Image (cartoon, rainbow, N blue to C red):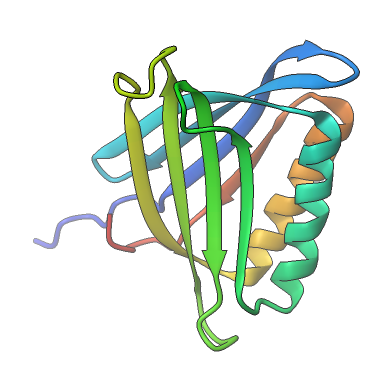
Length: 150
């Protein structure tokens, strides 16, 4: 009897705190097979909106590298999504890096996962991110490919 394949890796982002007009705190959750992590990071709604628009444009013609980043890996909470094209064909490897907020970069928990993602999925995720940045409600979800390595 074959083992059931694990669900596809999943990344979700939602706003958990607002100090408008300049600051929001986003919570990022990642689940991939036996691995999971949650971290929060501060950013601005305008930065998130600009990153979402940039990702949508990039996903339509993926060349080079696209990076979306919030917070910083200095003990204040961090999210980095890094997608890179592989000759413009097939799935796009996307790496998500998370670091928890601890006040001290030496005691922060870190997680880094890579999953292949289809360009159309990145475009949908970017539209959800843009809506999240504008309304500050709901969540943006990016699903990787089922059966991808964890």
